[in-house]
Image 1 (cartoon, one colour):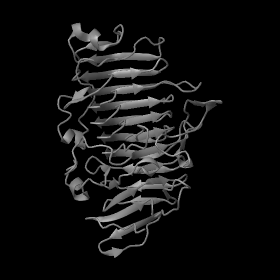
Image 2 (cartoon, rainbow, N blue to C red):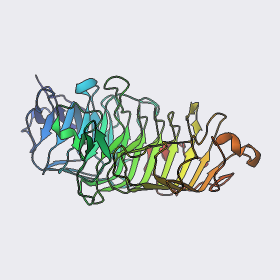
Image 3 (cartoon, one colour):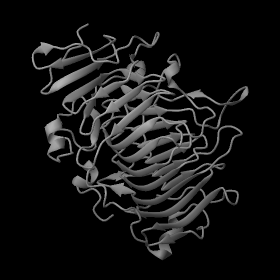
Image 4 (cartoon, rainbow, N blue to C red):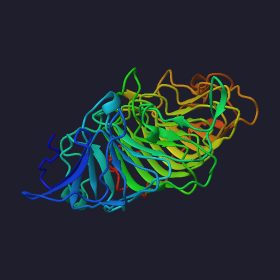
Length: 404
């Protein structure tokens, strides 16, 4: 199989079927860059097996699962564009940072790193010129490829029929691929740095209604930096944390097909300063521990548009009976009838609402809470997220943050 494809710019094709990493520049076939690897068993994938750098003068096309393996670092330069081909099931396209691997993807406000679909015609010169939106795909076109998955060795709360387990397979990756395991006993685990990253048009369905999130974090530790990340038009959740301890700052979700922020398995970090616009699942889906290990997380300083251009969220805040979370300083606007905080009768101290404001009339507030209105939930309010640093996002450049 020929893995070389000529794009408008120089290109690197990571082709699952060909099992090679090959560069292509101008009309000459170049030599493979460092990082080439072989298959990943019956469910074949490209493995990056040596330290590798992706540069901003190339467009990188992912074809199938591309995995950075234990002990290896993938560095991505500011302004680099990575495009994912379509694929479903075991052949869904995704970039996976396995346990023990690192990604050093540090964009800048002027040169963000963009993960998008192979159908997207955006090019490096667009990014360099400050034009961050797709020139040909609408901001609600989703499911065209998979997404970005970061895995680590921080603690999780999971169980099986035999009791607690400290590692499990991340959703979206076949169980035959051991690089999909996450969880462990190192709260300070370091999976690298993701900063000024835009992830778009992903969330392909891998079967039985199971899609890949924009950014999935499984057992990711506090040594990892997650800062200034935008997810646009993902078919599944914008961000999902499966256990781990990582703190995440300056997050944007726009026009995704399921939840805005989704937490599972006793994630014990903090999400600070975020915007969710037009999530058609829940604005928040905050699940409790799945094993005996119990830890909670904090979500604070956020602004939410619960409906946007015909996209209407389900519950405003969705929790389980055993959820453990502190919600602080969050403003929810563009609320419509039927949207509610779904559960407020938790055991004292497990789910805490502090300065949660819903932009409705005071007399109508009880209609948006399923139960007695908690003391920390009020009507009215003002935006809480600081969006002044989000000029680099497609979301803000398109005007979707107006009013926040």
